[in-house]
Length: 397
Image (cartoon, rainbow, N blue to C red; front, side, top):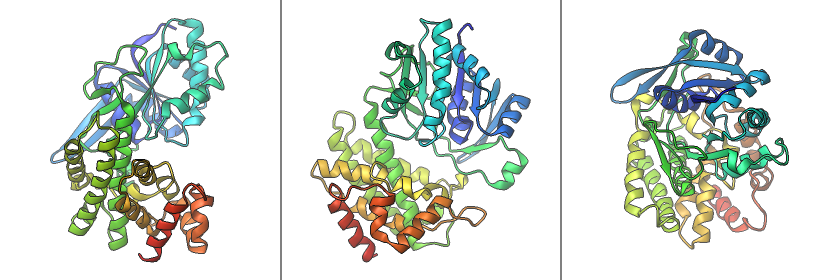
């Protein structure tokens, strides 16, 4: 049960887990242990002990991540053992699956405390969500013993995940289920103040002192801009498939940039100690260049699907709108961009809509007014003005 300081346990062997967290730490000399729910992915990782990341940029590069193993989520004994001896851990399972892995992590922490009572474990929360550390701590406390010293023994490291990883075409998955495509960007922005052990000295790890500013930059500029292009582009060009295609339309490109810059103005005001408007404008233009990466083949479907989450009151559009309202700043372009999401009908490679989006669109067609409160979770009183503005936009679209 001795701690291996160069071992990372990663919950989630999906696209971000493999192409970003696994790649960074694997290339940084760490043994990488994945925990995943997919038995075939677990089997292949254990069989091959490696996987490939194909970097899609101006030139194509294939990176092989070695010294890899995996555990199925049902194997609680081995998961506990790996957490007990890990140098660091990470979670990349998606916002709504996070609470499902908490009991597994808590069991490992409890055993770690028994064998290594003075060895803290830092957990990188590679999830695009605000207040991820607070949420995770509250969930862990439900399973840890009352006297467990969580504040001193667990570092909960919030991140800003800016790497774009497209859906892998079915033909490529059939050839190699472990292969993953990704853009060249490889900077992991994380909370430098959250660590209980020294920050890993790994290329690409970028600790920040005010992580909430960077989390909001990701959500309200990157995510907002990406979704704006997908929704408005699909509204104008429903026949198109890829993000680079719709952004070749100068009308889509200009509106996307304008909406992103309106959000940038809000953020430069809210986080004036972290960003200038010039900083954020440079970031906007860099993102728009990355969004148009033809080699990445990123689809409109991937970027825009999951409407119930992306149009929710705490997500990319409404989060920026709320900051705008609280700071008496304009948000009309952001709200207009959001309105196009209600007309999003993009399909995947098999010609199918995201199942939850079908239900969302059906409800919207049947009773538009109820969607805001009953599905998206808006507050009838607090959000009355925004609901009214969105309703007017939708009527005049």
